[in-house]
Structures are given as C-alpha cells and as structure tokens.
Image 1 (cartoon, rainbow, N blue to C red):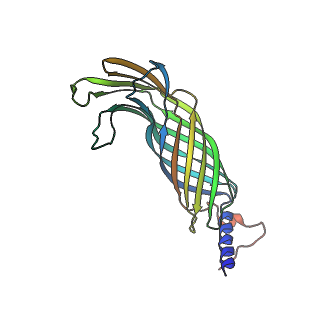
Image 2: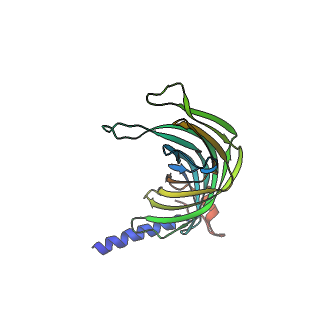
Image 3: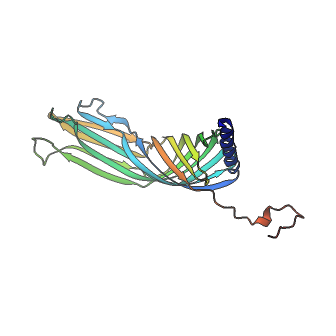
Length: 262
C-alpha cells in the first residue's frame, strides 16, 4: 500500500512538471541583503574602536518567469533595494548589561534594477520540491546624490561635539552586474510556487564613495571607502498560478479537425 501511494505522489509530481511547458507566471519577491564597501584611501591604520560594517538593506521585486520546459526557466522583473555605508565607534558599556553600544553613521542610496536570469531546474521529488541553479545579469539604475552624516560625542563628553562624520556621494548612472543564485522551490496543487533562494551580485564599477572622519583620544582619523554594488542576500518569492493562454481553443486544433459541440 505504501508503495502504491508513493507511486501516486510521484505521478502527480510528473504531471505538475509537464504543465510547466511554455508557461508564464507572475510573482512577488522580498528579502534582505548585505552590501559591502571596500577601503580605497586615507589613513590605513584605524582606531580599535572604529568599525566599518556591511550595509544591510531590504529588497522588493515584481518578478515574471517563463518556464520553457521541465529543465529551463527564464526570469526577469523590476526590483528596488539600496546600497550604502555603515560606520560605527564602540562605546563603553555596563557589565550589568553587556549589550555592546555603538555610535554610528549610515548613508544609503536607493537603486532600481532589471535582472535577467536563466535557471536550470533539477527533477522534482515526490513532494514536488526541487533545486534550481541560475545565472545572469542585472541592469542597475542609481541617481547622483551627496549625503552628509554626523554623530555627537556619547557618554560624559560634550554633546555638541561631532566626533564622527561622513560624506557619501553616489555616481548617477546605469551599471551592469553579474548575478547567480541557488534556489529551492515547491509547487502546489493549484500551480503556484514558493521559491527560496540565496543570491550573489557582483559589480565592477564604483557606484558610490564615502569619506569618514572621527576623533578618538585627541587623534584625528580619515578613511575612504568605495562601493560597487556587490552584495549577498536571501530572497523569498511567491509565484501565482500560471497565466491562462491567450490563444483561443480553436487555435490549438489540427487543420481539418472539427470542434466538438457539447
């Protein structure tokens, strides 16, 4: 009996895969990512209390996918996220409350993108879940902008003294980036899909630049960082059930075959 049920589930999975040939779906995608900036000038020696952190950002996309067959799928859409810089200085903390405290400045720039990716789909298991691997590129749009940020002395020092400040500038334009992904997805009985993926995006040109200045123990420091839009992140996508074919039923009949009348 168990073997019969297992065979039935596998048959249902094969039927679901067969329904993917030349199929359009629309999906909504959201997630989070860590954007990394690299040191490119200024003082190479930093104070031990200074931190240059990865910039965290959310992402929201409207996605369209076209499943050519059981093996290949093409995906594109319109997405929004941000890139930026995150600098911090570690502060004193209480031994009764060991949560670290930081004074920080953050600068972010909005970005819009049009990704185009091709995916190879592995065979689904009997629960209609499978792995996918994909690669492609993303056309990213960023506007030119300059942001000045500062933070005042924390603790017992004078609160009106800025002891860390940054000036960040984005270079407006269009940037091409490489992208690849590993995903796991499950197909439901109504044809909808839930897709979870890890994504890596690599940029090659400088999109934004930041200079940070801070003073600790009467010593002035200056560092410069550049950002090319590279990030690693997680995406969760819900694809609605396949769009109905726009062709009329008569368009699928062979020549000379009469339509049946119910």
